[in-house]
Every structure is written in structure tokens, then in C-alpha cells.
Image 1: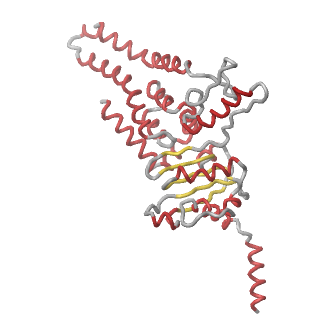
Image 2: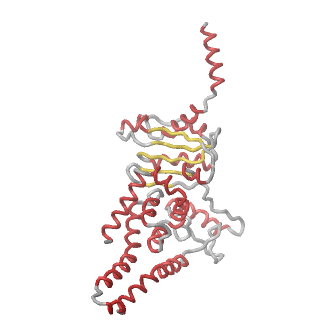
Image 3: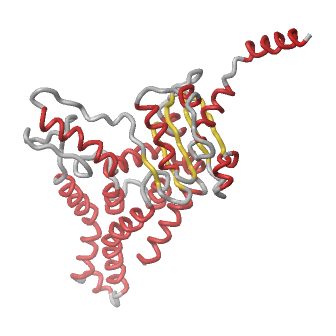
Length: 326
């Protein structure tokens, strides 16, 4: 049973990520917030917990996990481990039922034991998960543990299971440990990027459309298609897009999603812009080397600029030059 279950779950995961993303978001958007928050905070361990003590049906878990930043191989092996225990319990119960040959067999010790195990398995699984969670390190906003002279960072501290976030935390933990008596710095998670290294790559920072709608945040959308980018055409990688969410009527960036070759590299420009309060006008006014994939970021800013062109002023300019031409 298990060998077929996990590949089927992985196929549903991939189909959700690459084929039915918008459909799944519309259908199960009310559950996406909890799944996304849990995955960001606990990574693979959150999926493992859901496999042992499912808060949602398995098919929903498979589909919604496809919309998170979890890597496919992580999803596969965590699902393998998490589903194994439950499968053993259910198969054992089914085996004992199949061996009943008389009414007296219903009261056999093995069958009763199997049903008892079937009943208490969710409770045991939850207890095990709680025990494992209790072994993680709790830190404050300065990455200081319950022991004032000990600081922690990385996966053990959370809330993100990313290597680059661990490196980010390491600076705060080190500086606070060395100079905390003089000055402490709160770990800043305001702009956290992540990338999924599939083909094509998917990278994002800040809000996407689904999150903005769930939080009731108004936004405008600017999209640049990579099929129009010379470098992508030359590299035969002319597929993908740069999608930017901005504050209505302003160039302030709320979030960016990039799908395409080297998306994980290209997202850095938007990470820097959001971190330092730079808007799309600044990106548009920055010279980008031609021909490079990085020009896609500038052209996305150009899409925003074109949509916000001062039409009345342009009409007067047109009349002025018509007058000059006589």
C-alpha cells in the first residue's frame, strides 16, 4: 500500500504546484493560511506532524503543500516516514479482521489489541510529536534562550527552515551574545525570500496575490513575460514571468514572484529594494547590463510605469510638439 501511496501523493503535490495552482488556491484558500504558516515555521516537521495526526484530509494536505516552498524531495521522504507508521497500524488491523473464522474470533486478544491500537494511535502520535517539539530551542526576539548566556539560530530556533535565514540569524545571535550588555538587536524577519529549485525555478519575497487577498491588503499587479526578454530568447529559456505587487497608486513593493531560469538569483534585486525601501521607480532608473536576465526586473518596473503614465500631461505634450511642428 505505502509504495503506491507516496508517489501518488507526490504527483498530486506536483500537479498542484505546476498545473492547478490557481484552482487549488480558490478551492482551499481558507485552509492555505494555516498550512503555509506551519510549513514556514516548522518545515518538514510540520508535514510529518500532519501525516501522523492529520488536521486535514490527506488529499488536501498533498494539494496545499504543493503551493508552499517545500522541496519535492522533502515532501516525498517526509511523507514516506510519516505515512509508514499509520499504514502499519491500519494494515495490522485489517489483517486481524481477515483472519476471523468464527464468531469467537471477534474476541481474540490479537483483534482486540489491534482495535485498541487503532483507537489510541492518534493520541500516541500526538504525544510523540509534542515530545519532539518540546526538545526544540525556544528563543526570544534577540535569539536568546532561557539561559541568558546561550543563544541559538537556524533550524533549531525557527521560524524559517532556510539556510540563508540561519545565516541571517547567526549575525544577530553572535552580535547579541558578544555585545548584548551594551546593545541588543532584534532579529528582523520583515523581508525573507525563498526559492524552489525546480525547472523552471520559482522565487518570491513578500506577499503574493493569495496572501494579499486573505489579509485584505489592496494591491496593483505588474507582470512582465520573459518571452519578451532578449537574453532569455538567446538562451532558449524564454518562458516564465516576473510578477510584482505594489501599493495602489504608488511604486512601493509589497511582494514579488519570479518564475524562470535563475529566478533564485534574480529575486535578490527585489529583496534589496524591499529591505531598503526602494520603489519600482528606482529599479527602472537603474542601468542593467544588456543582454542579461536581470533586465527582466527593470522591464517589470517599466510595466508599472507604463500603467501609471500621466495621460493628461502626455496629451498636452503631444499638442505642444504638434504646435512646434506647425
